[in-house]
Length: 344
Image (cartoon, rainbow, N blue to C red; front, side, top):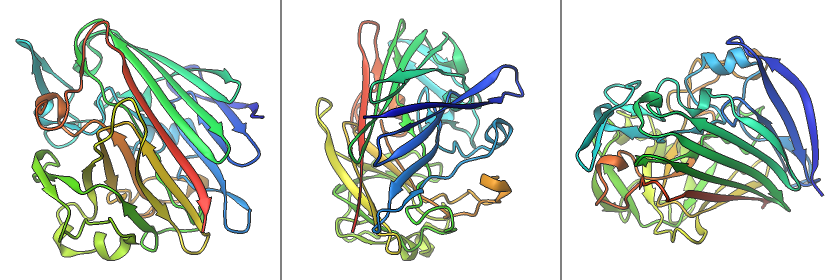
């Protein structure tokens, strides 16, 4: 049984209120905001059965709106980067909002992380919905979205459906910053990461794909679990200040495929990701320094790790590289990911 509890809302400085709800099935629990579909807190048990929060978050709507890290939010209409904020399809060209170097990142400066979603209860979780109008951040078509967070045993399911009345690329991801040691930890370096994928994207200096590469012999080969610290601190990644790379999953769109697992030695917590998305971006919170977190805490770089199932970076312009992310009228975008929590 999942208990649904409405919490005191926050005032939105832009007008109105931010709704807050907590859902709890007795094993894991989470707090969800109507702002950005944000997961503000996620409580899972450690090796001793004690529950603790494992994601970074903020204390107010003002703090969430002031930070640019997409803490816990849904990124979209297109997660990751679109080169030069430009794309074209069937003879139509589109100019998107540019908000990171020359790229459109995570849907632009007013992406889905800053939108107000409608939120309601499900028997086993919460359902959020959003309508993004034609031309929102430059993206074509009126886009209707449904987002479900559901708790089943020791699993968090995230499922998203989206449709549009004009052809539009859609890629949505959950952008939580995980630290399995809990809020008392200010580093991810002792976490171990294991990734099933044998292939990653080769990226240029702007984080845009140029091709694919086998992980064998690469620092980013995580087929056997290894510590994050020595990898992200290697001088080979000085340009990105750590890990910010995309792995291919070979997932079947209709089925969930195991991607890999994250574990923490002190708490004993583990998190295993299954997804139907073609790629997963691993981001070591390389530029988190200075963002404001809970209780006025100033966050540090490498304080957590993002594991982001999604379409590939610059997918609208790289439709033949891995998969075609363009959704036409009458088609439905479907993303489902399962986060399984355990202990070791």
